[in-house]
Amino acid sequence: MVDKISKVTKDEIESAWKYLDGADSMLHSRMNSLLICQAFLVVAYVQVLSSQTFSEKAFMPMAGFIVVFLGYAITRVVFGSIVKLQKGGDEMKKYLNHDPIYYAYLQGVRGGDKRKWLTSYTSVVPTFFMWFWVALMLLLTFAVLVGFYGLDISMKFGV
Image (cartoon, rainbow, N blue to C red; front, side, top):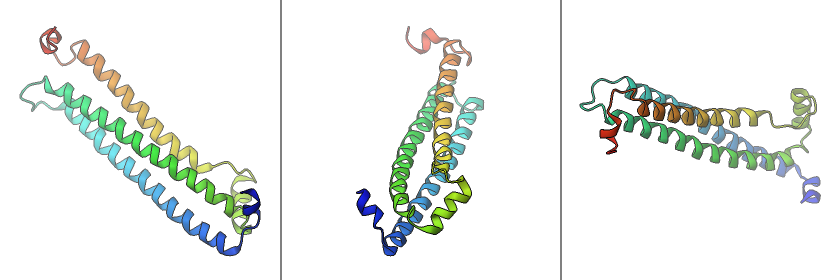
């Protein structure tokens, strides 16, 4: 494969640019969707914790657990798709390294370092949200166990 890549034609470079542009657009739209989804889930979580309209407060922790589970699951799924898009983009960049304009861009932006500058952004944000939801799950579990909601735990869990 290395020999094939070293003999890249101008048409192949143009084709790689088109694929990379599409993959990059999809990557950014998925990141935007993730951020919007997380914002709604955080608001839902806060609403569940601060709501006084539930007829029975016993349902509040369950609703909180559902929101936390959804937040973690959605983040995990989107993170998996982002990783796949990045791997595909990295393959296209092998072709683009033969483009003198792209190579000059790399030299200017990274000083010749070919590390993936976007990877940190697209990896750190979903990882942060996964840890955020894990922390909220632990906090909610602790709150339920110590009776933060004023519930009798022995009656609620049938113990």
